[in-house]
Length: 516
Image 1 (tube, rainbow, N blue to C red):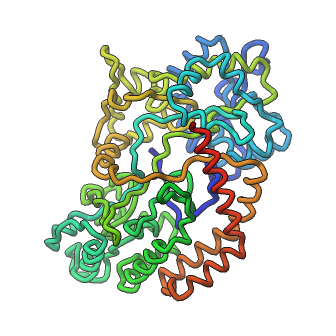
Image 2: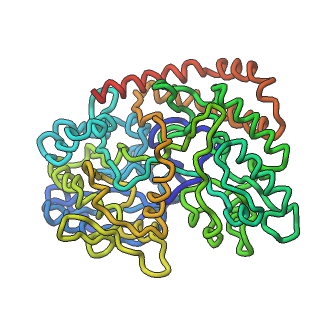
Image 3: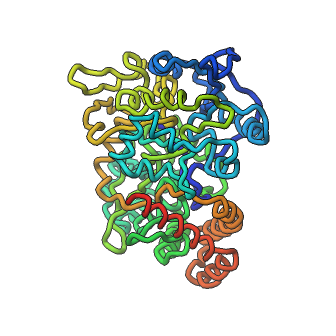
């Protein structure tokens, strides 16, 4: 999948808070202006890039015909969506529905509830597939249910997702050049990075051009026991209880360890000052990567032309003797389909959308329709087809499907029925996942917040995020985490840390109860 690089430490833990740009263009797949009475609905959706409209063909087009409706798709680019969304929610010509969690965040929906129709009663009457999914998988209903008990958006459960997320990849060519074995512990890892720095790992005679480690902070300090989850970059779960990562002793110890590595020249000196393109240029240099270890989704996505030199680093044993991996692969989410008060006959819309909550539909809207992205075999199994020569599997899937976005649900055992190419993309990621996923831990779930909670978190997050990030970069570069720890905790409390954690705990407890 398209994978963003993990940030330094934290963003607000509102489940679907996406970064959007600002411009003002959109496209519509149809020019119809018929009303709902004629069975035509206007639906807004957002795409990362302009990959054409093939994703609306095949299964999607057939589903509209089967339901007796016509969808006038307003398709926006993510880079254009910010301004457009603001205008729509401020009272513009809102569509009948929004498709995909990239369109609206929890906050957008919560702060504009009067625009959206509660769906729980309509679901029960018009969506047998989703109703059956709710019964089979209580997490799906829990994800979709707001704190007030209503369901304002439809959820998804994605197929073929790994259990672990971003992992570390190490330059095997450099290991071999120096006759080093693969590190298994955090101490051995440190020694390998030191050798990369001091012994001309790339063999070009220059002892100063190797960058032993270039990646995010949390990946480096992971052996100290702070696995980040996909739904929060500030909260994690330890011993079944939510914790704020940046106040844990294990966080402080990990930062001190990383400072030692930085002082020894083992960390990219530009880690906190370079942009993504600068960092990528070092990993994807056509003359050979300058980086020994970095974090990412797969080697091909992270190192480009140098991917063949890299293998996945094992989950390292930390000071407590345990191994940890990032549990960073979202499977469930909400905000995938929202109906506005403008829609007439919303029941008809939901009957159409219910078609998407089957195994056949979910794999087609993730990889492409049958015959394009997927082949369904006579025995009920599936084969994901190879992308055309010269195209990446990932982009081919995005071109021909909604991919991550929109309603989906796959049942128990579904993933075992699918064969994927393993040369790249999801197939390679799942193979890599098998090597490390047994070390995955419980992650902070995709909780819901009340409007009051959301507003308070938003206000508190600004100061907390800024302070945590500034101290983190300072301590990695200059040291002092242990010496300044008490004053750091005191300052966080003055900024409202206790209230922040209290809200997170309430939302976590509410989520746990909703599973029962």
